[in-house]
Length: 78
Image (cartoon, rainbow, N blue to C red; front, side, top):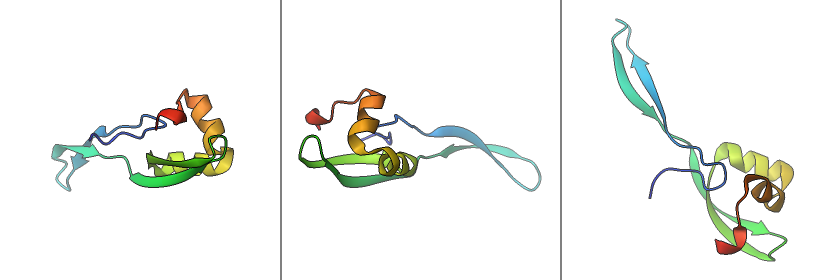
């Protein structure tokens, strides 16, 4: 399973690790993903999602149903 947030679609970022001598090497900055079981009020059931921590904060602010609709995600298929 790839490391992708199921609501926002966030993925790893290609970056550079810069040493003290300024030698640059490639590194991947991974998304902080959490497996969560969230209550979906409109569907009256629990939904299991793999979310980034930033998406979790947005879900707490807006609500799961509203945020999923905004992102174009159908929660009834999860």
